[in-house]
Length: 174
Picture 1 (tube, one colour):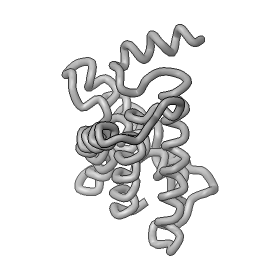
Picture 2 (picture 1 turned 135 degrees about the vertical axis):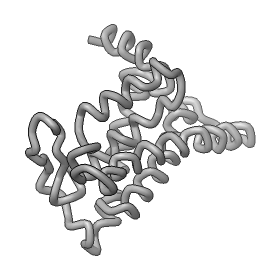
Picture 3 (picture 1 turned 135 degrees about the horizontal axis):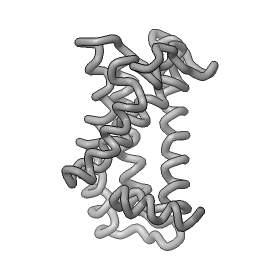
Picture 4 (picture 1 turned 180 degrees about the vertical axis):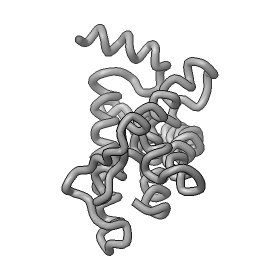
């Protein structure tokens, strides 16, 4: 995807995650307080999610685009960042969804195992970044990403806890 697609993805993710983390669909009743809490959560999520969603494309300025910062070792660094530094726990979601958008929504794909392998991986669902359908594909992929995140949040573990707590919850489910 292009920068416009990643910005659109990031904005929709921040809005959708705000709803997922604030609204319990089993007991939600709209009030002024719940609207304020939702707006506050979206504000808290916007910066880290947008930073994460845009970060991998920094490799257009150096290195090899869709290789240098589009791989699993870089994602692992962002997963490890919050436990070490104690903040920005949602940056990894922006990075991970950037990868998904490039793999599912784009014809080219990304080098997931770089620097061990330059092989780029994608799904046959992608379109060219210059395609007139690129924005529609971005929205469809983002809605699917939000569906997965909602499923994880509601049924596996809460996304707004530390990764250590999430791992403990996930292992208890297994």
